[in-house]
Every structure is written in C-alpha cells, then in structure tokens.
Amino acid sequence: MWEAVGRDPVAALARMPADALRAAAADPAYVAELARVHGRMREELDARSWFEEDHAADADALVAYFSTEFGLDASLPIYSGGLGILAGDHLKSASELGVPLVGVGLLYEKGYFRQAITGDGRQAERYPTNDPEGMAITLERRPGGAPLEVRVDLAGEPVRVRVWRVQVGRVPLYLLDSDVDGNSGPARDVTGVLYGGDREMRIRQEMLLGVGGVRALIALGLAPTVFHLNEGHSAFLALERIRAHVAMGSSFDEALAMVRASSVFTTHTPVPAGNEVFDPHLARRYLGGLADEIGVGVDDLVELGRIDASDSGFGMTPLALRTAARANGVSALHGEVSRAMWRPLFPGRDVDEVPIGHVTNGVHPGTWRDRAVTLDLPDDELWAAHRRGVERLVRFARPRYGQGPGADLDPDALTIGFARRFATYKRAGLLFRDPERLARLVGDPARPVQFVLSGKAHPADAGGKALIAEVVERSKDPRLSGRLVFLPDYDMGSARILVQGVDVWLNTPRRPMEASGTSGMKAAMNGALNLSILDGWWAEGYAPEVGWAIGDSKVAPDEERQDAADAEALYRLLEEAVIPCFHDRDASGLPRTWIGMLRASMALGESRFSTHRMLRQYTEQLSLPAHRDGRRAEAREAVA
View 1: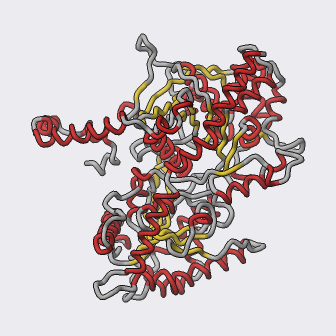
View 2: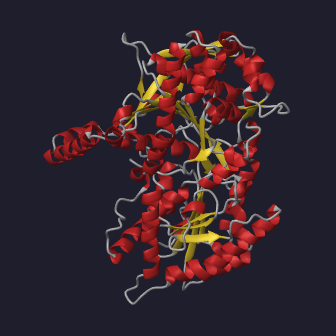
View 3: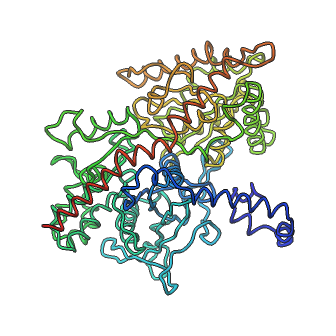
C-alpha cells in the first residue's frame, strides 16, 4: 500500500484501516518507538543551529527564496527536475542549518506530467490532479478563519490568489493557488500545469509568482530583508518591490537601488536560448498596470528586460541581472560561461569584471544518501551494503517489466546508470553510436555489465522524445536483452533508488551546456563512481581516484566531430578501465581498488557537494552582504 500511494504519508494514513490504527495505538512498543522518533525530531528542531552560532549579529535577516518549482518529495509533485529538486534540497539544508528563510512557489493543480511508454517506445503524458486535502500542506487563514488571499492584476483582470504552506522543518514554503471560486476559468488555470501552455500562460504564471509572492509575504506579516531568485522566472518580484517603495514615497531610481541592494539572482542556464524571453507586446500588456502605479512609462520597464537597443525580446534574465546586485552561476565553469554570455549587459567591462560569480550546487545528504552505506565500515561490509542497494534497484525494476528485459537484471553485474531530463544536449544517444561495440561490451558472460536509463522529455521537446524512443528501441535488441533497460516515470522516488543502486553514474552532456548537474553528486554520495564529460560540477570534482573523465576540456569546432570523439573516449574507458577495475577481485572476492575509489567518491560527495556547504556559501557570500546593503540603503532613504 505504501508503494501504491507513491510513498505519500498523508495518503497512507487516509487508507489505513481504522482497526490497524487502533491496534498500533494500543501497542506499547509501537507507541514508545513513535515517541522516540518524535523526540529526536523535536531535539533537532529545537537545537541551537549553525546560523545562530555563527551569525547571531544578523538575527534580523530573512531570506525569501523564490522558485517556480520545488522538489521536496515525490508525494508533492510540483517539480519537473533538477531545478526544483535543488530548490527542495535548498530548503531542507536551510532548516537544518537554521538559516532564516522562507520559500515561495506555486501550487500546481496537476503539476508536472506522469510518464508512460507506449508499445512503440514513445513517451505518453498524463496529468493526475493534485488534491490539496490529501497532501501535507495547510491553507493559510486570516485571524477570523477566512482563507488568506491576495490579488494580482493580469492584463487588467484582478485575480484572487490563495496561499498554502508546506512546513519543511524550520522553514515554511508558501505556495500560491489561483484555482479560487470567483476567478474566471483562464485565471483558475494559471496554476494548473507546471511549464504548460503557451507563452501567455507562462507570463501569467510568472507574474503570479513574482508579484503575488511579494504580496503574499506582506499579507502573512513577513518582512524579508533579502530576495533570492532561483532562476529568472520570478524576476517580476523586483517590479512589485519597486512599486511598493514608490508607494511609500521613493523615486523610481531610489526604489530600484534599494531593490538591487537586497536581491540575489542565481542563473542556471548556460545557453541564451534556454532563458525565458517574451514578446515585448505581450510584456507591455502585463506590465502596464505596474508601470502606471510606479509612475513610469511601460517601455521603461520593458527596457529592463532588453540586452541592448537591438534586442527585440523581453528577457527575464536581463531583468533579474539589472535588478539584483549579486548574481551567481551554479558551478565554476558555468560562472565563466555566464560572464561571457551576459557581458553585453555591462558595457565597458572586461569579461572577468562582469558581476556574476558562482556557488556550485549541492545535494541534501538526508534525502539522497543510503544511511546503511557509511565510510566507517570495513571493506567487506561496505561492499555488501552497497550491493544491497543494487539489489533494491533490481527488485524495483523487475515489476515494471514483467517478463520483459528488465526482469533479467543481474544484481552482481556492473550496473551503470543514466537518468535525467532527456534534452538533446545531454546526449543520451552517445552510448549507441557504435551498436556492435556496445553489444560486445555487454555480451561478455565473464564480466557482466548492464545499463539502466530513465528520464522524461518536456512534452514539447520532439528531439528529447525521439531519444527516449531510441533508447527503448535499443533495449529490444536481442544482443542487449536484460543488459539495457529504460525505467519509465522518473521521479524523486525512483531517482533515490537509482543513485543508491548503481556502481557507475554516466553523464554525457555537450560541454559547456551542463550548468552544474546534481544527479552525479547524489550518486557519488552513495559510493557510485562518475563517468562523465568534464562539464558542470564534474569539471571541479573529477580526480582519478573518484571516477573517470570522458575526453578532456577541449571543444571541437562542430558537434559531429565532438560526438564522435566523446563516444570513442567513452567506449575506450569502459573497455580498458571501468569494466576491468570492477571485475578485478582478490582472493576473498572483493574488488579492493574499486572499493577504495568508492570510499573516495563518498568522501568527495559529503565534503564538497552537499547543500550544507552550498547554503553556507550562499549565506556568507551573498545573502548576508545583501541583507546588510539593503538595510544601509533603506537607512539612507529614510534620512533623505
């Protein structure tokens, strides 16, 4: 039943028979164990935190962290992939470190899609409805009991918005919902589907998030001192904050200066085409009301979203960079790429002077790490604990295939995982460039090897869907039977099983298009060895003792040559390094060299690539300086 409800505790309790609950309540041992677990939770929440110990002087700080998606758990499906899961991990580490932070997002009625694979290998999407009453969320209410609501003008239509709360340890996450009685049908649909609809739907969602999010925080009685934008989707919050300052007597320039001083922007996209851009005519329709209240022309606001005078679009990233004094990429390499990409916004500056730094992403240990696999175990016990993770993955895969190829997965084989969003630049097809060579790799009975792939393509991404179809078709090749499987409906639950159950994590993006990537960090934290292009986080994390680099940092002049070179490097590493190392056993049957690399990989993940490290950097390098600058700017304005 736990699996049937998608590991949703609220749904599980709702389905639990009353006599089972009564029996548990009457069982002294069960009640004592429940009390022990609850006591541990209270101790953790009540303990003095890192922030209280190290930053007591800034106790009045409060960070409002805006993101269009949050991946907290599979039972709250309001995320699509890496951006949302990073945001969820961000909140969890903020809770554990005691960072004063609130999250702001949208409560999607249908969230992101559930994936099925048709008989011909194609992705099919379905959108089950999220029932707020059946999820771990609470409707915020006013003192008299009425639901707390704010209003947002969407191109002349006033839209009522409710506010829900998800409590993430110490940190509240507030989610906005336009599916409110009295709103028009189109208004109710704004919070319907994550990344769904046309360009107008996207600008309506982003207006609701940015403008509505600021108004919701005020209605809740909160006064953030720092606004952190996780990607550009929420950049309209800057215009709403400017409007509020102008309403209190500031000029436009004074308001902009105060907003910039107290804003932090994290960009995640290393290519211009991946950044949100709207037609200026559409932007004018939706920004007209704000412009009137601010007292400027709507074109003055539109200019904030242009790269330069020749730019024909309204970009959310330029808007965010112009209204946030502090900005960062999500790896060292991505910081370099971002400075070069956005240099036109800062005329007269060299690339190195563009004010975009970097904070490399991380992952939340408590969410992703298998707690049974620990560094203090001796080699034989560590290896046995890791193999149990592989066995779990095999058990997880078999029911999804019945008598199909997944039923033949071998828990003793070298298991290589590849799971992520199926975008074309991630090159899921690189493994199949030489089918004969791949068949020879997996066809050696003395050195068994198997590949487990999973992931979703955006519903509008024809290229990504074609890649999925190719993988599924390849899995039907008799030479690969039982050695190559595609697991459908990738989500946080299956991701956890995958990163805890593979020996090698494969990543093949086209450099430098992977801003960071975090799946490899999750796998490393569980002892998997990374086999990856030197892109994103792996350009920082790679060392010979923790995994393998596919190719080098050079980029060929055309994609075909690069793909051919990278495929050759991948096959050669598998043949000459990865497979021999895994199957090299001592007299006791243990792969000692591999186990040493496993230990080093775990240590790397835990020490350098956790969200605890990431949050400390954000707090000390970006958020607290923004908090102090914002306070000084407000003080100067008050004196003036």
